[in-house]
Length: 115
Length: 112
Image (cartoon, rainbow over all chains, first blue to last red; front, side, top):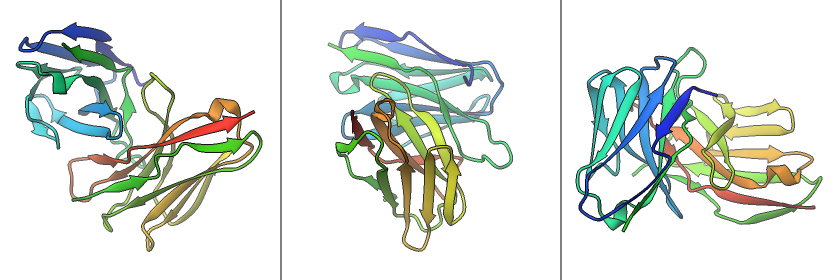
């Protein structure tokens, strides 16, 4: 258990509404990631963070923004949700310790449905 | 475009047999390779990591890496019905900020 929680776990929202997903970790890891997972596409990186206030875009960042004001929290915001953003969203952390430079551990996921 | 390719399956294997899962990658500079298991409706779980050419064994699991041929494989010996899941291959992106690129996964079904 990497001490990662995500909230909410399930959400149904309407097109055009803003949505914020939260990822919380208890172990002060520097690197955090947001992915979406869709059938046939595997995991695709949305945004990632390498420290407080340090974030960067992934391969599918359009329509998403992130914020990290504290080490333990990484927020993903859909400013105006669209049906194409219906997906399962996973948060991950990377411990970046010697001998395990890149391995990632995942939260339980958030299932988001945009109607 | 850096890529990781996996056969989507499903791969059906009799209980007790060896399941063999394969993954190829495009970035010759990749140094770290991972296998994750994902049960339906759950999050990915790390089961194996490998960094050097050759084999790495952990219980019933063996990861094999061949950097010259750019493939990594996962063998599961004495397959059990509980091994039925989707297996994801992940590879680090050279020069990235600790990013991984992911295959779409292979669905494995172990038949009792």
